[in-house]
Amino acid sequence: MEYIKNKIRVYGRMIKFSHTIFALPFVLSAVVMAWENHSPSILDFFWILTAMVGARSAAMGFNRIVDADIDLKNERTAIREIPSGLLSKNESFAFVILSSLVFIVSAAMLSRLCLVLSFPVLFFLLFYSYTKRFTKYCHLYLGFAISLAPVGAWIAITGSLAWSIVFLSLSLMTYIAGFDILYSCQDIDFDKKEGLFSLPSKIGPEKAMFISSLLHGCTIVFLLAMYAAFGMHPIFLIFLSIIGGLLIAEHKLVKPDDLQHINIAFFHVNSAISVSLLIGVVAQGFF
Image 1 (cartoon, rainbow, N blue to C red):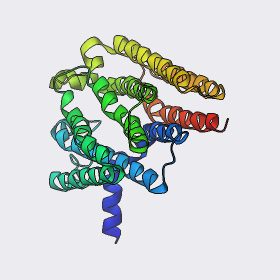
Image 2 (tube, one colour):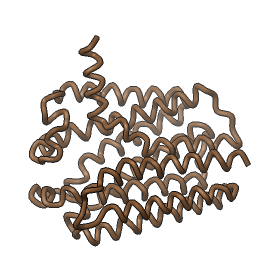
Image 3 (cartoon, rainbow, N blue to C red):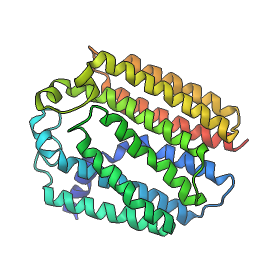
């Protein structure tokens, strides 16, 4: 029994399960917005959450497998589960296959349309692992892949796509891409040495951080567009201003020549941003 518990912990660390909090509030926000004109069941809610966990677990596990040899060379990532020997590639492959099946089955339980869409979505998620080999815009691709989640939740409940919910996905895309650029500043020298692509390694940290700030500015713009498109209650603007302040704080914490607060910005500030969005969406729903 203890062996199983330890394995679960190792798998959880491999996929950074705690980081689910970044995108999950966006998915739940989509569910809340869809709730105004539809009535999802508890089972719908369950399968949406299960699908998200399955998709994210498959994507993260696959990324760790593809990057295992590279991670071994990087002092910062050599302690990850596969390079350190805590998990084998075969164990990780089995985990990815199981997680992919969980995602596909969950999608099938939601609707036939969701089942059909689950395959291209899974492809987009897994393909991200290769983008750092050939494009410095891998951060934008990551944002795009993750931004499919709120749209997917909306389609699961409504059975159709609406432009209004696309603004929420675009805000998630720019939000993810922006802080992924900041996070990748830790590996500039390593990426250059290994011939890997990232904005900081190709154009320098100063320009990359400026682009990151522009992307986060777009996040606010897209959330404002969502506010207008849905005709949301003005109370949402209070939480939007909080999100704006947190994004500014994130960029104050991380400087081109000072990355010592990167983990605070990455986890704590980003968690507060995501949770603030969900609270804002729920709060305006009461009015």
